[in-house]
Length: 372
Image (cartoon, rainbow, N blue to C red):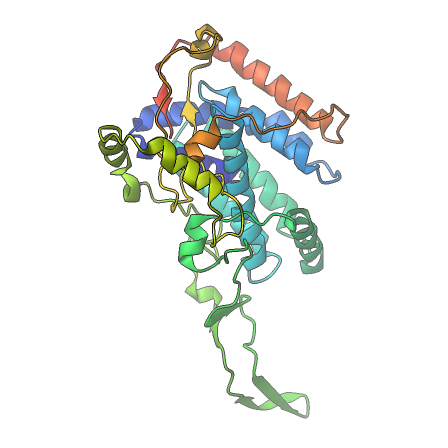
């Protein structure tokens, strides 16, 4: 999930034309804490799986370690949902349990590619990759199957819709995945269904193949290129170049005013959506047909500290859609404080964060950049 978070943040920063050096600096502050050697060693200790609330707190801390953070709870909710659904799809789509190793390696390689060479963080990522491979390369298939079942049970109640997956035809409107298409991949060096072997005196005497309705893709070891894994799962699914005109479209809208905006907003609140079966769908993106964008703000914490908390008396902003109107409402309920099984992990995160901050010194005040 750290890899997916890195992909999303890199994608959004790139679409906002943030220079690559600045992107790497922002992501580096996050990854330096996550891939700290002592923290990783504790993460590899045998332990029970953390609760979802603890994992969510973990990523909340990650998103706020550097000079950037998402400016509202809804943005962080959407970010976490996207990370969750992509990882769930990967766990459901693998050819066989041990392919989880390849998916994880793809994530680590993707992080290294985004970050580039970093004198401090790159060795930490290499350490994480080496430790992971040494820990799981010799594990039995049935053990990896148990790990996969545990992860699938962990994600089984997550059914959030993603525009990227809906358009690719791998997700339905109810949030569930379409796993089997016209072509079905089978595990490495496995025999395709429909193959019948005849044995005579302990030797294979004949092989026949039945006609199957599906097409099975057989992957062989010789088909794998050097340095590549057996799957593309775990690589980034986001392409920043598709959305370079997003800001221009928003500027065009801002220059166009309509005195009936309030009536349109009221109509959207009252009318029932036939497509979703709900009164309204809370979305965080400029285009309500596009679920790929994360709305949020890269904001300097120093700027936030200096920001006045008094209520604004300026003229109310015209809303482009219901999503932007609802986005400013506080729809969250205060959660009861209770101890968590993952309390020690969050404590480790705090300790790691404090070391990073003390070493990097006080942050400089930076300009606010919009992620919306």
